[in-house]
Image 1 (cartoon, rainbow, N blue to C red):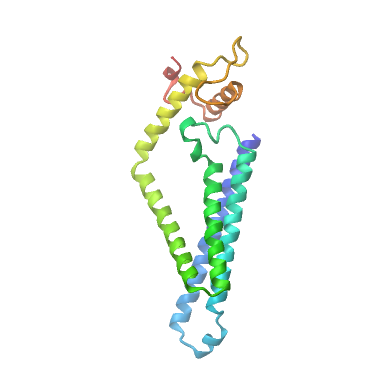
Image 2 (cartoon, rainbow, N blue to C red):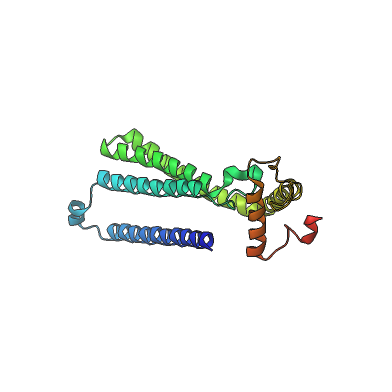
Length: 215
């Protein structure tokens, strides 16, 4: 129950953060349109300098990276067995992805901060290229995931079936006479049993496809 509540909390935090980013983008877009329409000379003196704007944007990127990296470290330390249930795709766990994304964002944000503070044109150009590349990769990854969702589903199903054969059926239940470690992973067999049992109870399912997966 506690794990489910924690994941729900993280989900709503990410949702709220993305709503905030969307509203911020709308505000900046509206301000830009206003400046474009109203060519008042006074606006040239009241606008914030370009250097300050770039520095604030880079600092925001730094804070975002710290948040994502902290979330990844927290998930790694207080990791649930559900996070890395797939043996061959443990590197795609939530903690690993958050740590990687947070580290990349921190590096990019640091580059932007240095470029804005020292007014280095090369660093600023590199910063904006990296930001553009990150957003391009995000869009590409989302599009590829949508186009190849059937292939991803089959890979995950195959991996789960392999896990059942190697970790659930070949290793005795913790209450049984034999309690050796699974040959496919270093995880304690009792933990693996609890993961599979709790998943089937929570999702109200039996096996990957149906009950025949156990025979």
